[in-house]
Image (cartoon, rainbow, N blue to C red; front, side):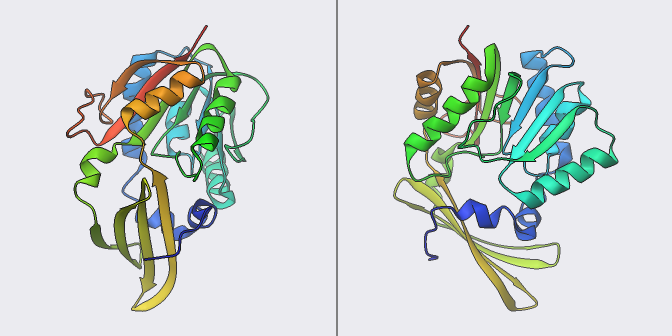
Length: 252
């Protein structure tokens, strides 16, 4: 078991190993999910939207392809550099990517919508910080604006823990152990190449129930309009859904 690090995300997300391990989460998946979302929330062309914890910008690129103005931010400098490069290569108009910590206010022009996807939340050991993150997001939204949050549904996962998995991705070998500890799901990741150890990393996310997430949204002035259980817009089922996708709006 690896030693717990309070800010594990600041190291892990800025490595090439993170992107290799999750390389199956590709642009095709993002295109399908975002297109389905936009059918539901019907944002007018040129709406200003935020992609919070955007990574390399796979969801941002899809949002921009639908005629939206995008502001993506992430804590990882290498991810933002990659997103900026792709935006330039694809000549994406009115799309910006910056390094920014979601625990801090963003500022600038208010948003028509914001997206926080792929469990890019719940990293912090104090739930009060998660509440503060949501407050910053809501303060930046226009009244009536949408906030879409996609989070792991831990119910089916918890029943299968601990889990062990070995993967080979992009020339690296990953040995992963996922387990539960102190109300969190942790994933210890050992990276090697040709039998030689490279590094050890850890992911740690809070286990939030749907009721807890709904409560967090309500506490910051969001009204949840729908909850999906997967990326196809299917209904949430407590016994089997892999995701909790909350479609909420800021109170008018």
